[in-house]
Image 1 (cartoon, rainbow, N blue to C red):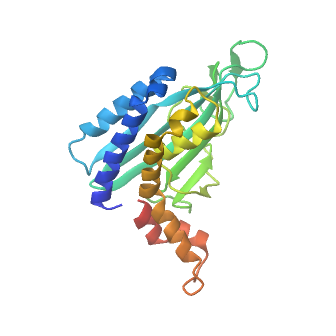
Image 2 (image 1 turned 30 degrees about the vertical axis):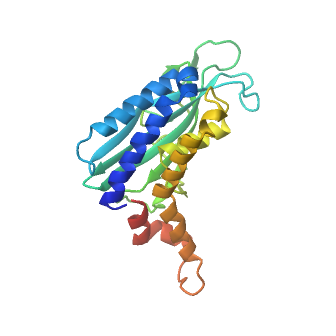
Image 3 (image 1 turned 180 degrees about the horizontal axis):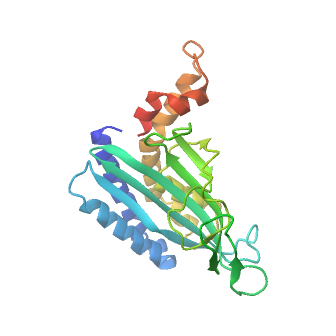
Amino acid sequence: MDAVEISNYRDHLVKSFSVIKNNQMVRRDCASISEYSGKISDLLKGFKNPHSWKLNIDPPWIIPIENDERYFERDQASLLLSGVLSVENSLLQMYTFVSSIILKSQGEGNAITQIPLEEYCEHKHIYKDRLIRRFHFDLAIGGEECSKPISHFQFGGKEIYNQYSYTLNPRIGIPRFPYPPVDFIILFDMMLRQFKTKIPSSFYDSKDWVHCVKQSENFRLKCYYEIIQRYFNPNTRTRKTLSGMFTQKEFFQAIL
């Protein structure tokens, strides 16, 4: 994204979080998310330089999963959504978003479960809430010793927060799978449409919210898919599509 797009994208995020904050159904049924959205919108507006700003969702949003007997019949569970998007002088410095699931009860009753993790982490954790799924959606910004898709998702990954016991090895960052450069708005929408939460479909199917998601798709996904389409042109195709996702400058220029 160029300087103008970076500035416009920040304005779009301000509006999108304001839509969440001001929605009556979200305010009524999930007040903590409504309040958090308002704070994020205000913080984004508070950056005087539209070319240097930061979206920081930490601590994570916690959204209870309710009445979902498909996968959580006996356990109380919640979605956790977090992430960081940092811009300096119209250049992305950090771009990572995380979707996790925690269980609030383990086995019979609500007794605290002790989970020894010496073989996984530096310290032993004893928590009632247990992290069971964790997905990172990242852009590979800056050099690293291993090759990886520029835009990718990974199962697990390094912890941004450590409030919950973690049963996966956080040191293992591979494999990373090519994935479109989703932002927090797109990720939030995807999670709401797959999990049963307090936030009703009347919110995420509303005209205002659908417009926000479409705008995020225009900012973050359009160029990505246009570039992929070029790779399937038989007249110009000289290398594998996946190879380009790892190395080609046009991928960097389009999605960073």
